Image 1 (cartoon, helix red, strand yellow):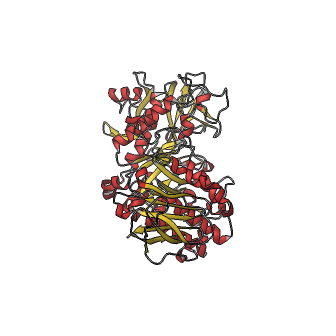
Image 2 (image 1 turned 60 degrees about the horizontal axis):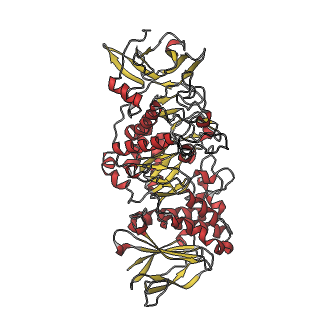
Length: 635
């Protein structure tokens, strides 16, 4: 076979931008690219390995023999090795054999920029190119309104490997099969978006995808890259957005991965205090290195550009921001100002968000950030990190803890369920009930609810009702919508057989109805990140464990009143203050019989009286169902 021919896709400007950390389309240059040189078809390879003495492409085509196809090092001190190998075509399996100047170290690495990887446990890269023709033009033109911060945003979090399996053949569903099964289900359930736990290639199933080795390749577990594009396309054609979990925080030490890539600490920080994650036994990116920053930002842009992602949920931001994260005294070094913040990470995240929103102003970046770090979801120009939204971890913790208590004790913990409103508008918050809350002995969401079966389901309907009427966008992990009994197991399919039983089917119908209520009630989303969109009626009726509040949109005539009864006691003639002399009509009730409730509803319109209450001139008397959430509209 012909040897390597000199060839380059890099211009002087590319090299300058790469070295300065501001090249955000590196996937167009690095990796393997099918091309034709002097009329001969073949593949151009390029890889960054500045500590290498030699770099060879190895694969089946040369019997995995190092030295036969050595790449050429560039003369500009960029550390890039490159070259064209004739007759190497699509589907060729390959790795890089790297001899390092660092002693006698040699490594065999998968291509960091590979577009396709072998199916685990195999670890090589595959030369790949697809000519997928997108059919989501309508969505792409209008997605700005669907992804806006004043639009309804109800997210279904999915782990593709365990959402549903082909039970007869004991295998994963393919991307093609998911394009039918998952898309139809999400549409039927009225979700606005799907969030996929990491779909990038990863070697170890128990990592759930959070230990990546193929940053530019959809996992081969479910099919080819173009088949994943087909799944995204189908979601878009059904007006469903897609958010991808993205992991720029750490990566595994697997031999074929990014770690110790060229015999040196290339991608990871060389100081273990900054370069090793003790909890996850993984390596941490060197955010101080320009080329690494460009690699990560290019990767974010890649999924937006090549796969039409509508957003990125950025994993483990808190672990990135703080030098002392999960470290004892003496295990970390303060920054130049003596603080615990990782200054390189802060500048990296700001640059990431600036570039994402510059290139794709109609998407969202969402931070999984669990601390009180300020201004995570505020614009970079005003001093923020620039994310579009942030997970409201405090709300999640307080709410689940509160709902886990027997209702008889809840009056002593009223502050736990109302505290989130004290800071609800400091960030653009998303309310998450995520996969992390249904594993490791925490129990399923339904399993946390107290009482007999009826009360558990009533409590869960109430929790979801409170969630959907609380300011902020929404996220639910798969299975929660129909009351999965067991904790999530990544090796098994969800327990879809539960839908044969009425309580679970009723809960599924309830969640579907909640999504519809949310999408069709502007007051529940138009001002979801603003204090103008929320007004307490009463938060201090701890004796009765009742919360009442008003949600407001742009047009006040569509404002709604929400009342939550957090005990199993029916409360008749319960008085709440209202701002105007009007009539109110019940438009939603979690206790409706169709949802498995007892059917305690307010059938007629209720007229407000000139009877001051809750600091307002008018009041109404309503009936509160047991463990129920009721929504009223002004008439």
